[in-house]
Length: 125
Image (cartoon, rainbow, N blue to C red; front, side):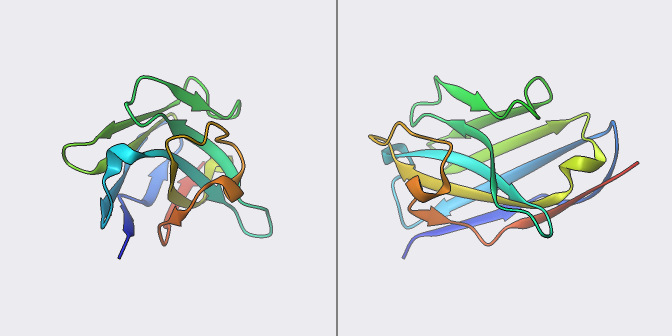
């Protein structure tokens, strides 16, 4: 049974930092490219960041580029999202997701097979 479990969410002051982690089990992480998405109340789920299966390519939404970084450790079956200088508009539930490494399209949630349950991030002004 595949499980993706996010952690590290919480309340953070704008301009601070927060690190989200995603622990994967039931799959070989190196067989999957990974992504982070977020969903704010009343809004659709949106792409935040993605990383290739080897970790040598990363992609970011324009809204977080230069502030967020994504990384992975295939040996530890973990993926992380480092959020620097978060803004109140970054407030959302953040989800970790896995897609087959052969799937190069990373923005659409429909390309991802497995999802975590999400972790709430609230950024205060």
